[in-house]
Amino acid sequence: MTIKNSIEVKNLVKTYGDVYALKNVNLQIAQGEYFVLLGPSGGGKTTLLRSIGGFIRPDKGSVAINGKNVDNLPPDKRPTSMVFQGFALFPHMNVSQNIGYGLKIKSISKDIIDEKVNKMMNLVGLSGLSERMPNELSGGQQQRVQLARALILENDVLLLDEPLSALDAQLRKDMCIELKRLQKTVGITFVHVTHNQEEAMSVADRIAIIANGELLEQGTPREIYSNPKNKFTAEFIGEKNIFKGKVLDFNKKLINVDIIDDTIKIANLNYDIKTNQEIYLSIKSESIDIIKKNKIEKSISKNNETINGKVSEITFLGQFVRYLVVLNNGKEIQVRTNHEVKGLKLKDNVALSWNIEDFLLHQN
Ligand code: ADP
Ligand code: MG
Image (cartoon, rainbow, N blue to C red; front, side):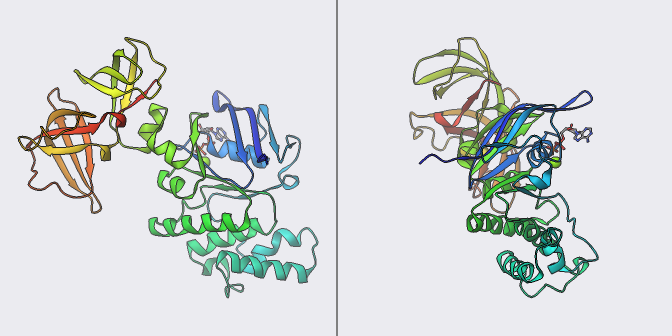
């Protein structure tokens, strides 16, 4: 069985004056997928989502949904529903009326609307609140009304633009779990826009990174987190341990790179590289071990690299501790551990050690 595409975006371009909001974006989303568009503000996420929904007409390119071209269809003729940024509820309508509105304007009978509204209220966890007015609801409840209002239309695709951005951090975490569960229950395709990487990771089957109007890369949350191809993604998803470097020599297994005035070896994960090529390297702060100098050193295994430095900052962050370490050449590296390293103080000399597979190489 082949999985059919829910959404296929081809060569999409959208400009506003001199600004390229989308530069030739190509994207395929499978039916029933929970897909997240993740990237910094101004990157083009909303423009892409609205182009799929039919609210924006791109300059070039095409959008197909369920295998059918929808370029000439207005939003209400597309098999999509949209949850807009912020809480756009009708203030003079109660919860049931807000949820049923989209069916009412289609002249569907009251009995059927009532039945569907009830079902939706149960589904999104609003039972018992049908008479409430929007100003009597919490932020999370208002967001549920929005969801119910979009889902009741029974379209094949739900488009969500920063659906959780108005909620506080804890509620956002809870709603992520609920959104994911909801998507599995209804089984339709969700396309969720966010600039929050934790939110993206917790809901997505797949994530596309969007910045400067370009789709940089896509993959499962694990792929994007563990093996980012682009320097930009490594920086956006992980920590700020990004270094400029140069390829000295390499074979199938190993690469010697000149980095931070030092030579280190990294694993060759099938990179397409040349000798003397300028590259970037990144390592996650949690992939580095920090060891008090004069303690171990000899026990470091052969798949590890080490470098010496001095602790310049210690920040206790509850679930983990962040150490800033200055290297001999003045450059800094961040190290994150999930417990305090016993006896380690500011200005202590340390050895940093990591597995050679954890230093990733990026071409751009
Ligand atoms: P995101 O949702 O990722 O924050 P947007 O898609 O809203 O990004 O915007 C992409 C780019 O297009 C930004 O530079 C933004 O300023 C510009 N832009 C978006 N909408 C308009 C508009 N209506 N008029 C002019 N520029 C716009
Ligand atoms: Mg936006």
